[in-house]
Image 1 (tube, helix red, strand yellow):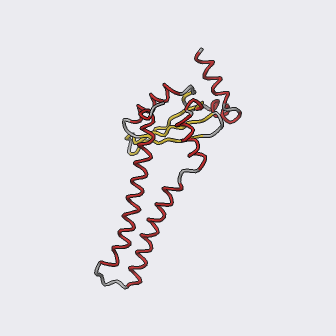
Image 2 (cartoon, rainbow, N blue to C red):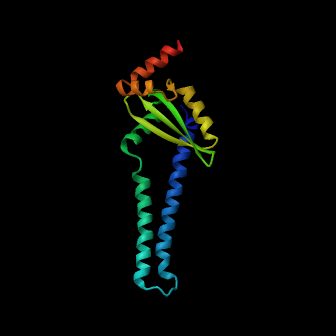
Image 3 (cartoon, helix red, strand yellow):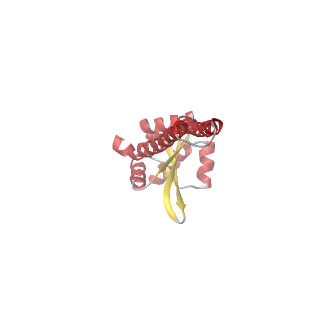
Length: 165
């Protein structure tokens, strides 16, 4: 699998990270800038507002760097290097006001781990094509697949291979 194939995944994480970091920096700028604005408010009020905006900035930074739990981070690294371990894929389409906004790709691995990837725009079609081309996995959500994955993830690979031949 090439870097070009994986570009949609990297695009999502880079966009998400940039937006969060921009908002956090904006919160810090607002918090620090309050001290230099002339106002009739007391220093205590300015301090309280600065603390609130500072906390928002710290919270966003913590969220950005702690939101990916180790299991998902390991799954993403595994997908990058060992994509053939994906045994089951299904996609959930999300809408807002009856307009498609993004898709969530649910990837399930041989070792029982899972990974959710949010993909938007033209990257959705590229991602689907790349997964179909490179992964020997069953597609779509069925209760039967859910049960098979819970009992023995390798059984999904066997099922896929039996349907191909």
